[in-house]
Length: 315
Image (cartoon, rainbow, N blue to C red; front, side, top):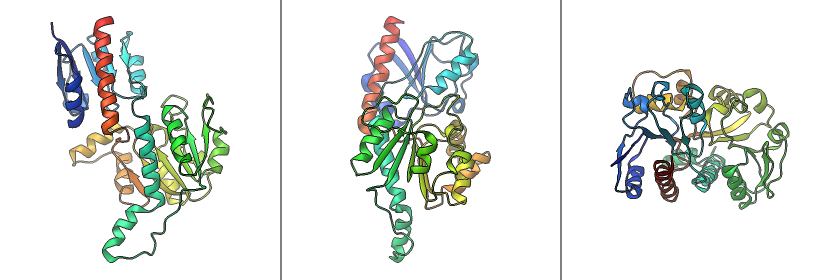
């Protein structure tokens, strides 16, 4: 008997690697968009796999046997279970992309500090005025959320002679010096958000807190957009408290992604801010892609199929 799984939010390279790991007795359907964008009103199988932008409908709860998110974050699974009305097995992936995400942090940090967008624009006239960069060595990096990803970020930036402090409710990484959030914000030259999204972290990194930073700080968010409201980031840039912002994640990301993929129509006020800010030389937006390397994709696909096989075998 064939075992069926439906995968959502699958990009081309991921589909190929998932198929490589799929057992022969598995049947799978692959859809590139979210559940909402695909317009599916009922589940096509008892087990579905999503990433972070799909909202598993409450109406599906009575039909589903299980849900797997192909991500390390699982806040969207927690939100689904709160509305499901029954205890549906939901899984997430282990530490498959921490190195990839940490390298992404280093890349976008250097892009902002070296004013790369401005340098590229300046080439046509071969001018150097207004594109002077900043060296990494000796700068202070505050990592807010020192889990698997945050720990890897700390390790990498130490390798380029930056100073690192961490903020976490469980200060258990021996190689990280910890501080309070308030003291860390006032100390930092670069702030990196690597927090999970919970009720206590939503909108935690807001204007009121971050306005206490020293002028010229760089802000990077690679965890969840709801932790740092985009309107607050816009205000901090306008008031020259932030010298630069880099984000790989966004508030109501599924809605923003659907709007951008359609390439037409009007988004909400957050989408309007994103559209305006993306043109600035000191702002860098990427499409929730920090996890996406050849190596992490192999780990992600392997873990996903392993988890599904275990679920169908053991329940």
